[in-house]
Length: 94
Image 1 (cartoon, helix red, strand yellow):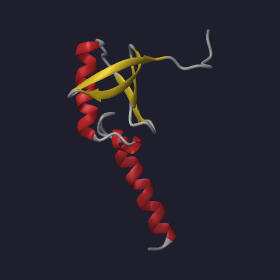
Image 2 (cartoon, one colour; image 1 turned 90 degrees about the vertical axis):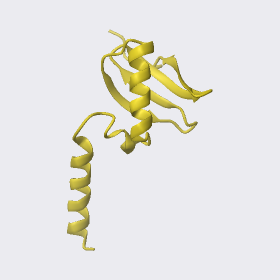
Image 3 (tube, one colour; image 1 turned 60 degrees about the vertical axis):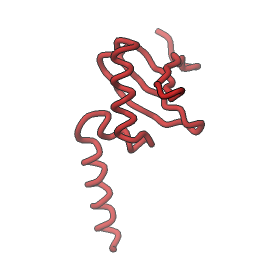
C-alpha cells in the first residue's frame, strides 16, 4: 500500500471514529463500546451525570471518565461498576 493511500485511510478512520456518541468512539482510548455504555448508565443512576465527555483507560486497567458532575475513576468489582472521584493535581484554579 502506498503512503498516500495509507494516510488517506488513517484520516478516514479518524473521521469515522469522531462521528457518533462518546461511547461509540471510546474504543480509540482503549475502552470497549459495551463497557462505555455500562459505565454511562451507572453514572447516570449513581452520580446523576447528564453528560459524559470522555473515557480514558489507565495502565492499571481502571477507566477515567469525565462528566458534567466531575471526573471519576471507574473499576469493575463484584460485577458492579464502582466510582471514585478524581481530582487533577496541578490544575489551574480560577
